Length: 235
Ligand code: ADP
Ligand code: MG
Image 1 (cartoon, rainbow, N blue to C red):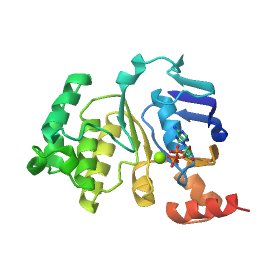
Image 2 (tube, rainbow, N blue to C red):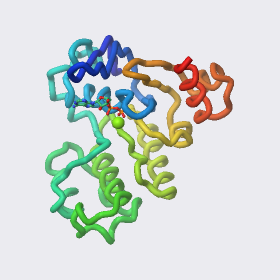
Image 3 (cartoon, rainbow, N blue to C red):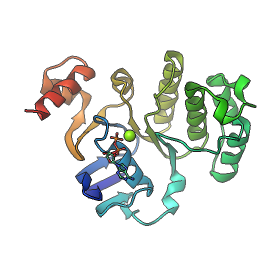
Image 4 (cartoon, rainbow, N blue to C red):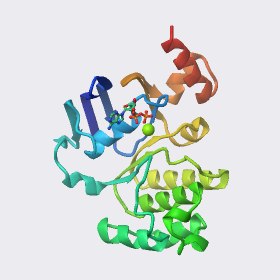
């Protein structure tokens, strides 16, 4: 279980996370939603140790993880922005990650699934945005970790790849994995996750299931429920 309590982070005068409390249970697919700049990526980075919070606690299975590092081998992470050396080819980056990450497998299946065989010898700099994202997804799902964190995995994907990603996530959930995901595509979130954390200006404005949220807002779709929440926040 991942348990975050009273997490705070400022960048200079900008308070980005303000007293965040979150519990994520093993086997959950939980969605962190919120408008641009609400603190989703910063929150994810604190879980990974890429941003050190000012205060608060993050416990993984009852152990404090802030300023430790060994737990990271249990997390597969798809960053919102990747910065791999752009001169490497797709096959080279896949081989490189295989040497760095523990428990890598499935790369052949994933390459087939996302149909990128034609691009294997292209340099990362020469790939289209969508193909680059497919490579990022392959690099993430290649390592077999109990926790998967996906920061906007749907960015730039065509509809067919989106369905493939959805199937992949559901398969991993069936293996008992814990998945944390952000996305602006509400139909995608609605199909894969049940627990929602809606961030607004660095605080959790809503936490509950999609059903709770629809009931609270009296809306039929997640998209309109979120729009309704945002309207409420401006009152
Ligand atoms: P989201 O992922 O929800 O779009 P972010 O967590 O990326 O939001 O950003 C939240 C706020 O924190 C934004 O105003 C962003 O500009 C700011 N921010 C994020 N990282 C840094 C940083 N390293 N230094 C200064 N400001 C930052
Ligand atoms: Mg972000």
